[in-house]
Amino acid sequence: MFSLSAWSCERAQAARPRNGATAGFTIIELIVVLVVLSVLALSVLPVAELSVRRAKERELKAALVEIREAIDAYKRAVDGKKIAPGGPQSGYPVSLRVLVDGAAPVDYCISTLIQ
Image (cartoon, rainbow, N blue to C red; front, side, top):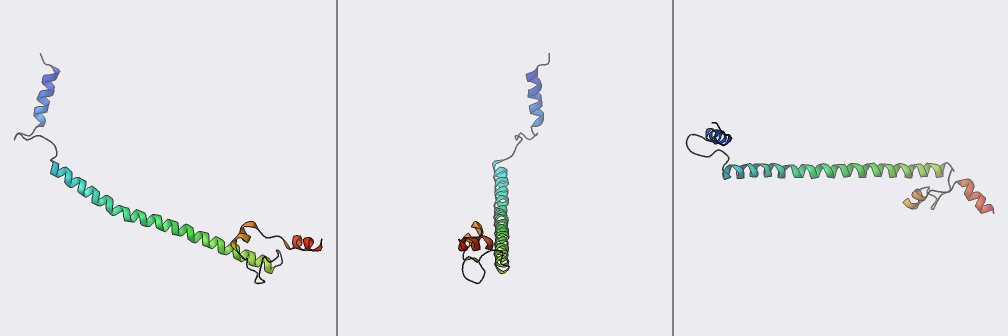
């Protein structure tokens, strides 16, 4: 009668090389593979850091462009007498807080001065 354990034993013997060595990887082969993988991983890290840095620089550049456009729009509004100047007569805001808080329209400034 053919048993399951006899079949698995025969199959295990068939998987072994004929010279008596066991099948599998040696510790040296595993260490070499780990070293190669670690070198590849370490070579990817600087590239990843550089791409993150460039993304932050693009965000900062976009923010600076937006701030510059806001300052120019403020200057055009002061020159066009749409808003009252918030400080010196140059037409530029005294600080960025003026752009954040907003400036009062010229009509509002005149009406508060009359009262």
